[in-house]
Structures are given as structure tokens and as C-alpha cells.
Image 1 (cartoon, each protein chain N blue to C red):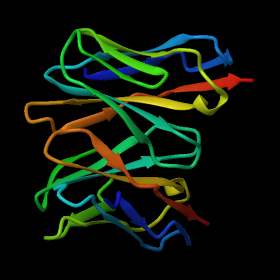
Image 2 (cartoon, chains in turn yellow, cyan):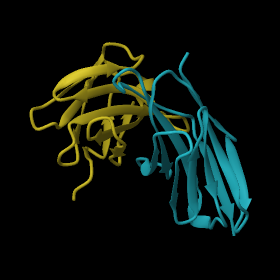
Image 3 (cartoon, each protein chain N blue to C red):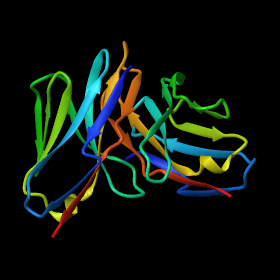
Length: 111
Length: 111
């Protein structure tokens, strides 16, 4: 069974640009979570999507947004990139309210 | 305020030296406690799920336990390959909408 897949693996953007990160959940999982992990720091909750709807949002500005598609895959968009947005962005998926499984992340570097 | 803390922040053990990691939580409406292992630059790897006080789960050299306010991850006779950051996460809220991670414990096992 395929795990959670994220693309791209690495992304380099210039300050002010927009970044789009993608996540494909494990088959059968309807929930997708996004987390930001700055270098050497913990996981900060960004967004939770379930059955196509945004169910919860962390303490991040509105320029962090996303969506979940009918096939349960998800996209995270970060507008007006700032240098401090440089981090590992992790996507996880779960079935209902059970344990979540993570992808390998997208390393976003803003220069 | 809902909170998840972990101690110690970092732990260095000699190979074979058993120890325990702690995860404490002050949350309303616990919907599950989860342990993960994370290697540098990688996504967290799921280890255990615990739902109720008194529950225990075991896998190789790892054993997780849960009380009403904390969980322990016991590591028996660790090996260098057990070196990683160990994260606990708590799902809480009326419908489990909050999935919050602790800051982690960095474990180093020396040969």
C-alpha cells in the first residue's frame, strides 16, 4: 500500500512569490493535515481538511491556504512568501479520527 | 489552555542503558495519544496509539503507557539506531479536530 506522497521534494522560491505544495493521502484516508516544521523546531499545525472541507486552522496568517480535492488529495498554497516561511512542510493523512501517517515533506527555501 | 509538553528535551544514553521519555498533557476531551519517531529531515514515523488510561503498547525495544495526565515511552536496551527525535501528539476537542504535537525529545544512543 502506497504511503502519503508529497511533491515536490524541494522547492526554492524568491521572497514575494507564491508556492504550491501537493499531497496525496493513503488510499481510503479522508483527512489531510498540514504542518510546518522550521529547522530545529517542532511541528506547528497549519490546516486540517476532512471530506473536502477545511475543519480547523492553526495560528497562521491568511496567506497560508489550501484545499482538498474530491479524490482527497490536497494542496497547500503560500502567497507573498517571506524568508521565515522557509521550513519543512509535512502532510499527514488519517482515516476518521485515528492515527495519522506522514509523508516525507517538502523542503521550501525562500531566498 | 490545552498543552502538550515532553521531557527531557534531550537524552544521551549508552547502548543498552534503558530509560523513559515523558509526555504530559493538559487537554479537555482527549481523543487519543500518539507516539512518533522522526529522523532529521524526514517525516515522522508512526509508532503507537493509546486511547485510555492503563493502556500499553509494545514494539521491539519500545513500550508506551498512558495515565490520565501523561504517557511514557520506555526504551529497553537501546541501540544506536534508536537515535531520533521522539514526538508525542494528542488529538482533542469535541470531534477530535485538534491534533497537537509536543516539542519532542532528542534521543542519542552511543555505541
